[in-house]
Length: 258
Image 1 (tube, rainbow, N blue to C red):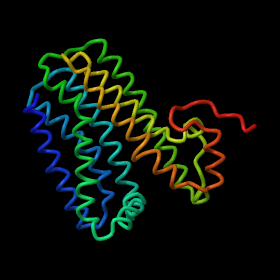
Image 2 (image 1 turned 135 degrees about the horizontal axis):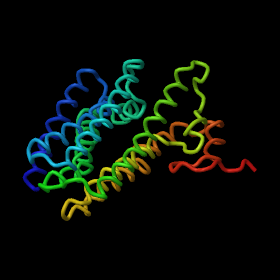
Image 3 (image 1 turned 180 degrees about the vertical axis):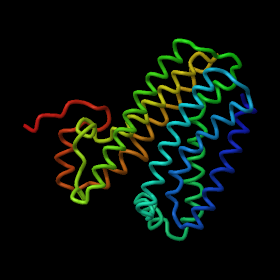
């Protein structure tokens, strides 16, 4: 497994370095978000090519590809409509000043590369186990993945339709899945990665790769997902009302306004 981990790690380093160079040409570090989903696709299929076929690994490759292609296309389509650098990276560009070049390489591209490698651990562990056929954990995990993927996809679609209406500019999305969670897309992404981990539990000694979905969930809740968006809307009266009555992450019934 160590050899496969090293090979995947080297690939991710070269892959993220390539996108870093492209970001310098475009003067837009937010293209790393497009690289994110595609990177997992290449990691999963590369693992299959190196270690060989198994039912579980093939299902992982397919599910990761469906998720990664949808996510990257969603972000790319948004980027084509609005080519400006995402507000998070634009803020860092301003705050970091002259040190932005090397800090973006290390703290944006390389950091996300390390996280990509860690989140890929269940896939790498499954690839390292030669015989993995249909089993109960694969079926359960596939169901969990489908639930999370559906939640993320529907939430992103609902938000895109909402933003498409110019009358909604500056307003907060409060309908559909967004009525029950302030971040249903992030919740869905977390759930689908827990599903991927469950799919790999039949691989010998793979339980420790729980660090993968745990890290992703922690990152979404406390680092790059929820906190940055919540700070963006601080002081917005409509958002403050929405915040008081709507669950932050896990979809739940709205709280009474009283």
